[in-house]
Amino acid sequence: MYNDPNQPQPPYGQPPNYQNPYEQGQQPYGQPPYDQPPPYAPTQYGVPPYGAPPFPGYAPPQQPKKSNRWLWITLGIIGGVLLLGCVGCAVIFGFIGKGVQQTVTNVEQTATAVNGVGAQVTAQAYYTAIEAQDYTTAYSYLDSGLIASNNQPLTQDLYTQAAQGRDTSLGLVTNYNISADPNDPNSITVSVTRSQGSTYTVHLKFTQTSDGWKITSYDEI
Image 1 (cartoon, helix red, strand yellow):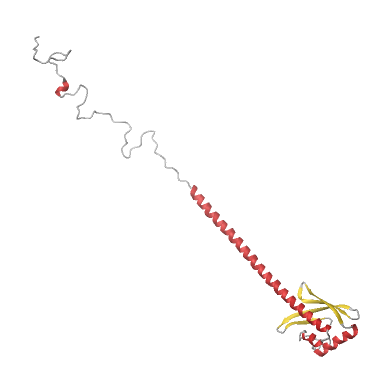
Image 2: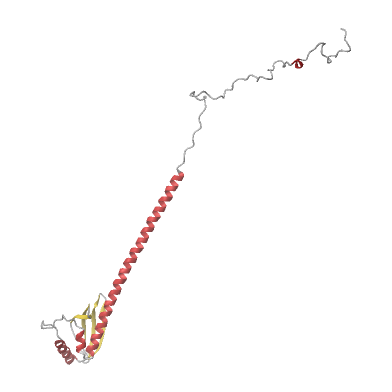
C-alpha cells in the first residue's frame, strides 16, 4: 500500500483508516448514553403500599410505658404533709387544753388560798379580841344568823355572858394557835390555852359576806 507521506499516519499498531469511536460522539460499548441514567433493579426494602401488611419479620416500634413513679412520689409527699399537719394540730390542741386546765386549776387554787387566808385572818382577829376580853369586837366577827343554846338568836349580851362564864371557870385566854383545814380552807381549828392550865380545841366555820368574813358556827369560846 502506498502511504502518502503528507497524510497523517495512524498511531502505531492501528490499521489505516481507523476511526476512534469517542471522536465520533459514540459511547463505549455496553455503557448507556450520558443523558440517560443507568437502569437499576428496585430494592427489596421499599415501603409497602398503604393498607398492605408489613414486611415479614418487621415489628413496629413499641411506645415506652409511662411510669407512675413521680405520681406516687407526689402523692406520698402530700400524704406525709397532711399527716404531719394532723399530728401538729393534735399536739397544739393538747398543749392548749393542758394550758387551759392548768389555768383553771391555778385560779381555783388561788381562790382557795385567798379564802383560807381571809378565814385565818378573821380567826386571828377574833381570838385577839377574846384574849383582850373585848367581847364587843369579838361579837362583830359572828354571823348575825347564829342561834344561842336556848334556840334564840345569839345577841351580843348572850355572847358576852357566855364568854365571861368561861373566863371565870377556866381562866383567861393566855395563848392560842390557829390552823386551817387542808381539805376546807374555810374551816379553822384553834388550840386555846387558859390561865388555869386547861387546853382545848375550838372549831370555827367561816363564810365571806358583803361585810367581810363571818363566823357561821363555833363549838367553844
